[in-house]
Image 1 (cartoon, rainbow, N blue to C red):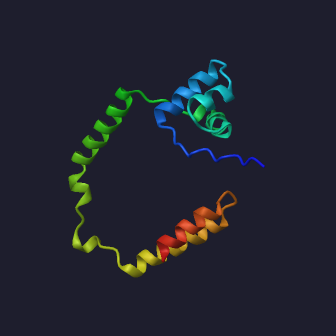
Image 2 (image 1 turned 120 degrees about the horizontal axis):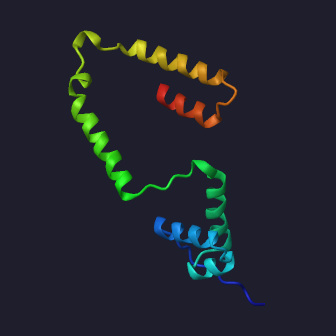
Image 3 (image 1 turned 60 degrees about the horizontal axis):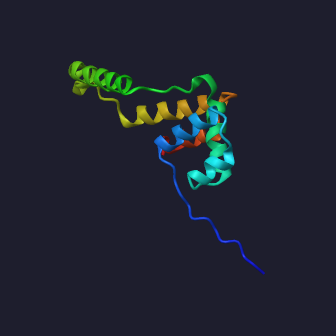
Length: 127
């Protein structure tokens, strides 16, 4: 009886994943790409499925887009020094903070589109 050997686990970089997507869009086969990138066919299929599920929300950013976003964040942080300093009289007591988290948890539990993960996240914050 011949036993099949397990394939070594390999991880694709983001660059490789983008390359796989481009080549899938050009019509290359899943089997060919899986062999070339040394991953299972399911991995290549998963990459394609994720992008299809994202649909129009998938966004590809250029280096300039990323640099502009980071620069904007830095400028906002520099300009908000006065806003981040709070006066001693503005300090919220622990009891008020805990009550606010309890209220937020009750609100989340009432919403129809809230997932169990949302509730768990809020409970961890509360505790």
